[in-house]
Length: 131
Ligand SMILES: [Zn+2]
Image 1: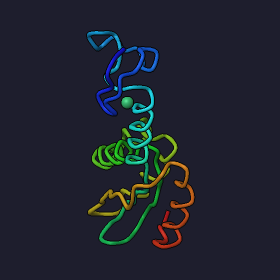
Image 2 (image 1 turned 45 degrees about the vertical axis):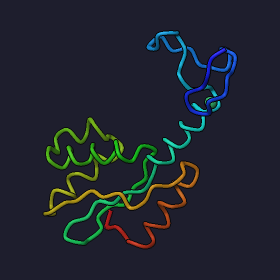
Image 3 (image 1 turned 180 degrees about the horizontal axis):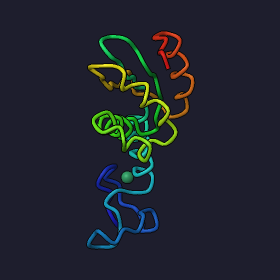
Image 4 (image 1 turned 30 degrees about the horizontal axis):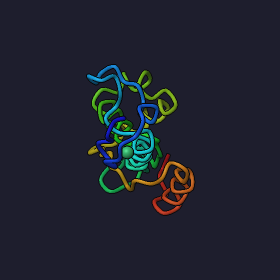
């Protein structure tokens, strides 16, 4: 038996995922708590973002890991040659973006992974991005 570090309930070891990085070979939180925190993590980090230049919306996009996508965009904006490698699906965007100044990448909202496409459409209608 092992006590879950999250729900504090004593559970058999079969209720914990094996993880060699821990001393006893199991994760500190049970499978159920693990799943809940994974879902939370995903919904926290999926969302909609926009790329703007002087308040003109150039692009609205969605990502399952929006923070990661944002930092990729930021490094691509600084160094557009690497955009093709980092975000191949959006590499068409970069030659366009480079015609603008003061480019900003911002998260508009975090949302559940299941409604990403819906929210992307909504914001595209609202903000009418140029690309
Ligand atoms: Zn638990």
